[in-house]
Length: 121
Image 1: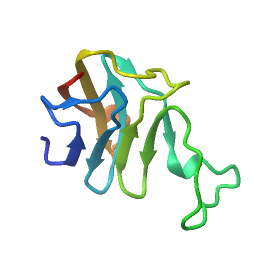
Image 2: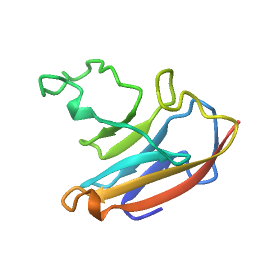
Image 3: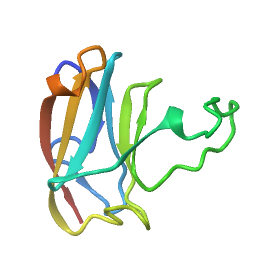
Image 4: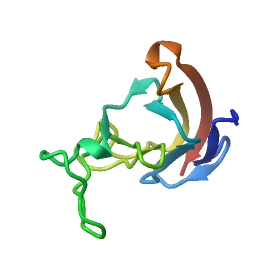
């Protein structure tokens, strides 16, 4: 893994279920977008989910859209296959995950790429 990725699931070579969530956890100061099988997933920032711009109260349920979700407080991008998403479930077989990531201070034009494979049953 690149030094800036603290953890990810599924890891390279893992076998997972068709509805498995994909999570990539970056060190502080990074932002990212996610691709699955060459498709860039639309991304929603967690801090933009409230129309008033205020954070949800602690413990409050936040309705997550069927997109990749970037949590800028924890520097995590995740995607959950679901009805209405660009990928509703993973088909059986091998899939390619990719993150395009960059230091927030540098901007997307200085992005780097990490790619991995995982299988679904």
